[in-house]
Amino acid sequence: MNVELSGKTEKIEPYRFFGEGRVVDLMSRLVKAGYNPAGVGTILDRRMNAPEDVRSAWQLNYFWTGDSAGTDNTGNVVLTLDSSILRELNPNSPLSNTYALNLSAEQWEELSDDKESLHLSPSFVEQVQRQGYVKKNGVWQPTNSEVGKVWDFLMQGKDVDLKEYAQMVSGKSGYDSVMRLYFDQSRPSTPNWRSLVVNRIDSYSDVSGNNYLNNDYGRLAGVAPEAHRFRQAEGTRENLGVDQPTANEIADVIYGHLVDITKSVTKEDLLQGLKNKGYK
Image (tube, rainbow, N blue to C red; front, side, top):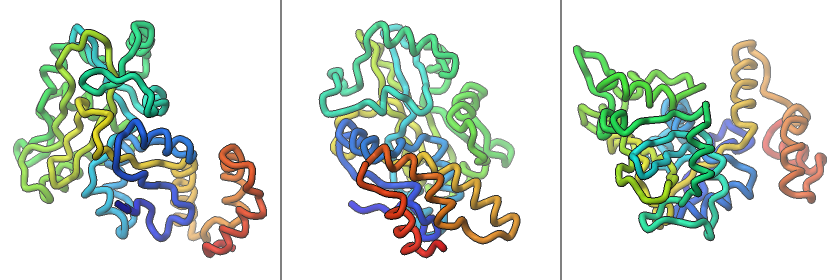
């Protein structure tokens, strides 16, 4: 399967599709290539704002993400954005009998103490399970405040109007309840960790934290560390009526990252490649 996620105007391939297969296999390839797994917020942002030529690729594919959901034997759930634990997944990672990543008691305690994560009690999970956005009095809104809190957490740092997004999903899917949330409520004997999965927009655009890490149909989208920086730079230049970045400007930003991936790349090679892409 070949899915193009970077638009023709995005010269440095800030986003890359890493194929379909087991996430425990795909993640190590993605990290080795110097990318980070796209999070829920990035995927929704691309579905709304990506260049027209690749927007449907983001909208009509589901993705395992770099955001994670963990649970323990009491039913507590911890949500973490851009999970370092998920980035360490590999074919030898210890999986539970439900194909989640097994965590040690020490790992779970550390994650539970993380102030930047969102902690959901069992009663909170019950309030958000299978709930999402619905239309009330002509306006799309979360089913309850707990659902809104989870979605606000997942969308940190992203300028996406979730009401507009819900309207788009409803228009494509025909459903009047969208963006529903699903978490693992099995209360495993050993704490476990899963990737949050974002469904297609013609299939509710649900977010679920109960999918297997070794399914053959996992999909990952990679985000280059420079992607956000270049998007900001290009937006600034467009607003000022300035030409696109020069080859030298781009090389100065990304060479330091590339040299860590492969020692065979010189700055001169990079400059020539950028010029071949149309940069001056």
